[in-house]
Amino acid sequence: MKPIIPNVVFIVLIVLSTLYLTFLTSKGGLTNNKYKGFLKRITYRGKLVFVVSLSMSLILIVQDYNNSNLNRNGELLLHEEQFQRDSLITDGIKKGVDDSRKKLFKDVSEAFANQGLRIDTLNKRIENIVTTTNILPVEKDPILHLDMGGKGIHIIMYENDPYFRVDFRCDDAGSTNFNIKSYVLIQFENDNYILEKPYLFYKSLKLSNTSTASMPLSKTVENVKEMYLYISGTYTNLSQSKSYNIDDVYRYESMTKNTRGMVFSDKQRVINLINQALKKDK
Image (cartoon, rainbow, N blue to C red; front, top):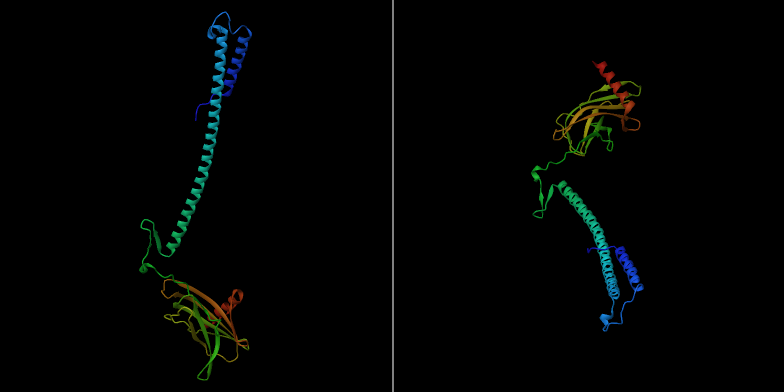
């Protein structure tokens, strides 16, 4: 940018020059006809008027040049401001693109990592980060329960003799290593009770996922009004790496031949009856 002289300087110079020129022209003659020749006829005052007029012309020329520089500097200043604004916008867009690119790369890398892969940006390829021998299957938790969707507690005939059987099912994963105690509280039509202790789960039994095991429950069939099955203990998954508790009570009604689970106070009432019966047996 070129240096700029304030316009007030030119105004002051022109005003002073005009006043001085007016003073010169009003106080005496500019020429003397006693002399021959144009230059000789010009008096000292006339020469001063010529110099002042020439100076005013030069001041006006310099002022015009100064105004041109002022306009040019203004344009340069506007251009510089526009460039700065454009640079800020460009930098903001670039930063936004870079942030989006980094986030996308992070999301893609995490997705590949979940699949046991990684992105090698140097060699521009995708690599395995673990071998198949290092990948261990995730073993789900087995759920052992009475098979309500099947027959549950039911009566079958064996060699013309009826007896109760019960079906248990294992879901989500296989189970084994059973350490479960079973109790059957039988209520007769006359409201008397007896307690039986069937051996349903032997320790080395293995139940695969979604498999069902049908087990003999009781040979007491006649005059049975209701039957309560209480199972309590532990079991493990097939790898025996994790143990699970079970503490369930089921109720069978002879009239409807339906089996359902018992919870809360109803469940506790049956457990209390079974504990009382166990104390009497001791």
